Image 1 (cartoon, rainbow, N blue to C red):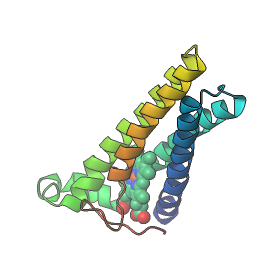
Image 2: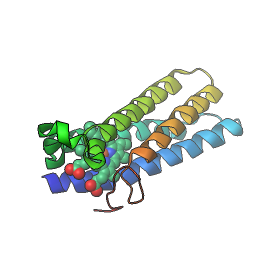
Image 3: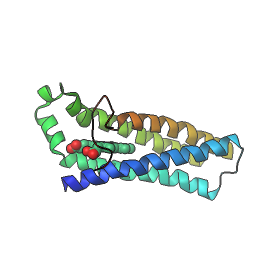
Image 4: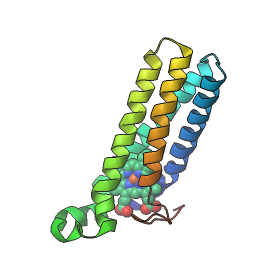
Length: 152
Ligand code: HEM
């Protein structure tokens, strides 16, 4: 169960990143070339938020099953001194939750905007900020915070 969840959560990161980069590219092109906000653009907005929500569910499930997290909360006083444990116990979840909230709010505001320009602009701003935070909060092999492989 734990191994399957780790595999799914690790692999799903690529879909989260790809969808966000594609949505940002779509919003950038739409905004700067005064395009009409098409049905496809709306699907891109919708699916980017949905993919982030699926990763959130995988993350919460993994959090409840992980021996790393169990160890962190059982031995909080010593464990908080280890950056690796503090990262997975608090930093990762906090930053990821914050960025998924940004994606959700950005997507909802964009949907309610009345002009196509405003729809693209809202998507662009919220999704870029969320992508930057997600990038920092992923335990890349080169991250100064915590390291996990690119693929499981
Ligand atoms: C966009 C959102 C997220 C992305 C891209 C992401 C990405 C990742 C990646 C790449 C790993 C390393 C997996 C590995 O060991 O190979 C990881 C680990 C982990 N993530 Fe996330 N994550 C996200 C959101 C969340 C959320 C919201 C939670 C919790 C509520 C969470 C909980 C965890 C836990 C507990 C681990 C480590 C488990 C362990 O090593 O035992 N993640 N995440």
